[in-house]
Image (cartoon, rainbow, N blue to C red; front, side, top):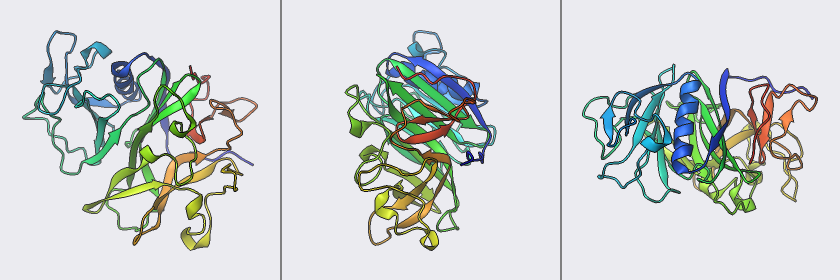
Length: 314
């Protein structure tokens, strides 16, 4: 079976070492900059002793990031893709497992009236809250496109423990969506239990992987495609193939979205350049098997890869 053809052109900054929470956030920022994104504004120490708030990059190292609650001085940063989408990370919690991630599809984050007590506003903001993979020692792999798609995958202790992504939605239902984007953040802890990895569960991928994204003027919660929806596909054509043991029968199965609750339970679209793999494949394996490293599997999920690097998991 031939490998899929990528729908986007991806840039990569992979195998980036992390040792703690601040290091993880800094490396995500650094990876996006190395993939061609720029800093629109930020609040960080900028190599000094106190927080600086302006339109420069004040996250020069992990030491520049400060965690605190809303209203109190804390770090945040807004990064802009070449196509105009903006992505915001805000460290507005002392609970490291509940940091916040947001994006503005039209790049509307304010650049005036900036504050150390909160991120800048954006009228079209999409909100995601969660743990992007834990703060222990390991590696983060960052990939991004010019038009605003991005993924960061955290690997620790030999497992893939976290995922943060913004990605385009193909074949959207309804077709009238004004913001055809999907964003999520989810991950596990240092215990690496199976339910906390990037893999299947009984209902959908992982309870923390519920997400919000904008449909016209309303937000709607969706989940990744799973076995419970195989009989509710577009025109009756199944996109997911899973047997009763929870294993995926075919590799490179497109990942879909669905509305998991009634009365509006339905298929919602397909994620670009994002696939389910087989559970029998080892984490960090690349495709094609003979070399080339065009794709990589973390957990049960397959991503584009840089073509040369050996993925590091621990």
